[in-house]
Length: 238
Image 1 (cartoon, rainbow, N blue to C red):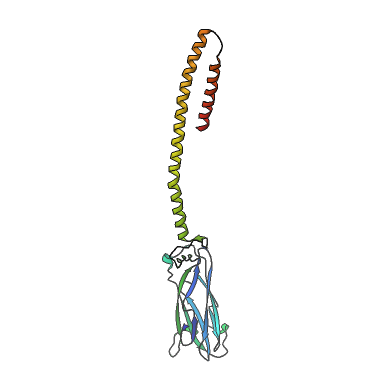
Image 2 (cartoon, rainbow, N blue to C red):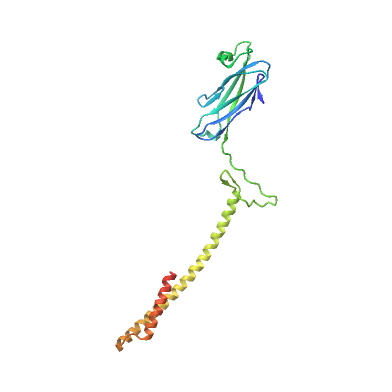
């Protein structure tokens, strides 16, 4: 517990969980170390930003008083989360029976023979959502295999393993795809060659059929059927 000879203060600094556009509060406890009545007053370098309740009061001998400090919602964070605001706690011994209503500003004036104790408190911002701790490696030195979720984030080791597995799969897929494409291309070329050969034979049969003046021969019908099958095969493969 820090403080002076009159009042003890806990904690020694005001820590506010900082989150944009949200109010934040912290409290401090004042303890009277004397056997007399002690009046106190809380001041700040930025009164528009903070609300102190109560900002004045009387602490009876050997008792404590809780003070709540509320920081108004902030639109932007300070550089490096460093706050320059400060608070000043003033304490003075008063007559027995004095209440909060009896406290005046003149009580805290530094006059000859009058002891006005002053305790300075600094403001510290702490992240409202601290980052997740990175899980340690197991005793054998192998990284953890389980997926640890905290605050919606995964451990970096899980991401590394997933990325490596994905890269290996991507390396295997191109070689397989190239082999399939090469095989289909060869089959397509063979089919085209056979189709051209059959078309030539078909033209010969047409000419012979025209000379004899007759209809289509059995061989001509068979060739046409084979040609249709090959063309269908080519269309299906492509």
